Image (cartoon, rainbow, N blue to C red; front, side, top):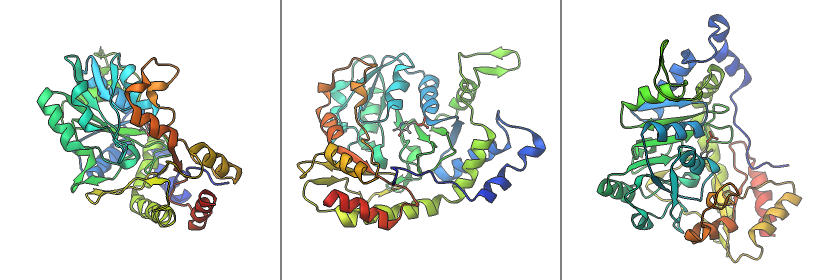
Amino acid sequence: MINVIRSSIPPFDEYCDEIKSIWNNHWLTNDGDKHKELESKLCEFLGVENLTLFVNGHMALEMAIDAMGLTGEVITTPFTFASTTHAIVRNGLNPVFCDINDVDYTINADKIERLITEKTSAILPVHVYGNICDYKKIESIAKKYNLKVIYDAAHAFAEEVDGMKVGNLGDASMFSFHATKVFNTIEGGCVCYKDANLKTKLNNLKNFGILDAETVEAVGANAKMNEFAAAMGLCNLRHIDEEIAKRKEVYERYLERLEGVSGLELCNRKCNVKYNYAYFPVVFDSYKYNRDEVDEKLRKNGILARKYFYPLTNSYDCYDFDVSQTPKAFDISNKVLTLPMYADLDLADVDRICDVILD
Ligand SMILES: *Cc1c(COP(=O)(O)O)cnc(C)c1O
């Protein structure tokens, strides 16, 4: 059986060493030593000024939206994980869906401007599959209309574009450290941001809005990262270069086998991006089998791929949006499959997966 993902974990002894100090200080959560150390190490690694850790990426995004005081409408993409859209709606805001482009499936920056109304307060694009959005165009639109930009960078850990670390794009960026991501803290996430004043607000929101022992100044929630998660992050961060290098090998083997095959669309890599090789999406467009047939065939061979992202978030049962507004996203979501992708995936297994697809 080959699963779509296999979480990377550090050597057992390394993790045990890392958590030993917790048995001395009995400090399990609430801004402990591991938390402090991970926050500062990640600041350095991601090359950002301001960073706040969270219990997961979703709460990081939800609380970033809250802290930035967004109102009304937020322009976003439906070709993403549930979290992006839910974070907008759970803040009482209205998502306005912009279609994606057909090159890398990120938001189509040429279609953003026509969606802006006097209620629009922000743009929330997603670096989907680690493909970096057209940040220059997005920035110029945001400037022109005085909008905030928050990137869902859950897929873009450790990436760079035009020599710049991606956490510096926009007003804020959210990274997810979920078990299935390139870098994990079991569950976890962070938000990076330009405005240093957000730090107090975010720290407040993730701890029930408690400012000090006798002052509760915001209707916060509980979204703190605990010490065991932070310790996992400290260990995994030591191995991140090796993690990405192994993923690159897997990625390149897939390319070797599948590039140029008629009916298969693979995302083109851009030379101005330093990738993390998080995913290997394939779009089955007039291939001899459709996406669902390939998925079924892989499953019969003990290989689990993922229809990522299907369905679109604007077609969820819990919502009532008009999917016809984003035809390209709809089309891709019906044709895309992400293949198994993780650092320890054997190249022989990659070959086996490709054999099934090509057979
Ligand atoms: C994983 C993910 C999230 C949510 O992150 P969690 O850490 O699982 O809460 C948000 N957006 C995208 C695009 C993701 O892939």
